Image (tube, rainbow over all chains, first blue to last red; front, side, top):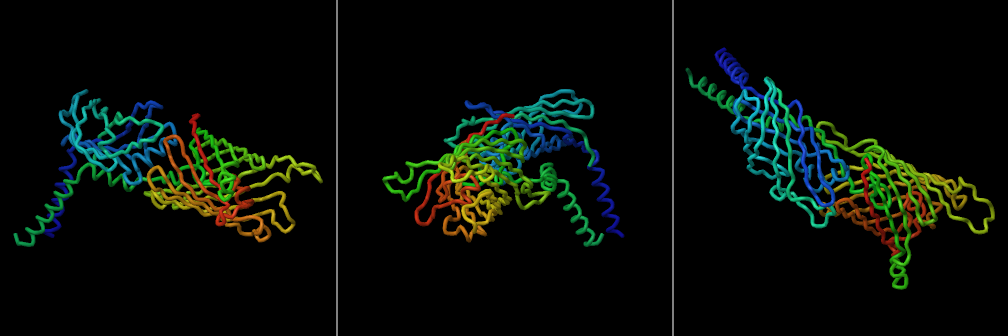
Length: 181
Length: 293
């Protein structure tokens, strides 16, 4: 009985401690990247990202399935997954970190996300400036940042007909809604 | 409080704090792993394994221009420049109506054959939340021999110039490097050379690829003709071995084969070369893809 009571108390204390932590999840998202190349520009869009933002702790994480990137050319998409990103081995790009400078309640604010970005199985500490907008209950975040392919061990072969730029510009646009666990 | 209780409470505290410390990323990845369906694409690099088709289909709106060459026999010696003096060519156009449905036409110099095919991907290999072990593609083609007959003893009806091929292509990508394919085949020939020959020839093809690097793969392909007793002495089973080299928008295939024909009814039923006595033709397929949509 004593144990039972202790467990009950613990369970409830857990429940309450979590309920006031305001967390947000994505209602919609678009991640895109763009690379200017002599032959043709390369761009792709991905709507399949998942993200959680814990406003109270200022913590943010997202997961982007690499196979979710859609290109206009199906062949380019196949090569991107098969040869550049090796999506079978590294199915997701990941980020986990903190939003510095975030204050709840502002309609628009500049923040900096700082944390660990993992792409193609390689992890780097990065800092990304972005904007957070709020309209009452929902939040939206926008950020644009460069990724150097070399930093993440993404090989660019010498004999390809498309000269792929060594840096691609990634844009992230997340729409968040509050959720209760 | 007795010792037991203290231990019990501290255990709860440890478990509790561990549960709380689980990061947002872990939470997301757990969800991702349980819901993610991974489609296995790029089982092979191109729509052709070597001579025959692979399970791969071109994406919607992709128009592929395919140039295939087979030179003469290597054992022709220096006089024939090891086969390079002679060349057969097939020019083809293929189009992706949808990601799964492809059509194509082609014209071969050998016997002046015009061919057309339809290819449909029935199933695509998947892992993760949904499991599907194989990619299966149905293939059918029609070939018309347009060669003029000199001094005809009798009029050759149009239908006698037509052959049909039906194939089920079944492949599994075992790893990003290794893929294998099985091809049960039926070739129906409206006209055969002798009375003993069956108009319907059944064959079973096996093939595969092994990626040596991300952009270079080694391929092999063999068709075993099942009910070919009557034509055993005339024709051989087609065998081919070669490389796929991918260079951005191109897939470049180089190979050695005992077959001269580049369409199913040709290389499966009418291969006259014996690979192991040097009747080997060097050849290549080059494809260029144009995205129309």
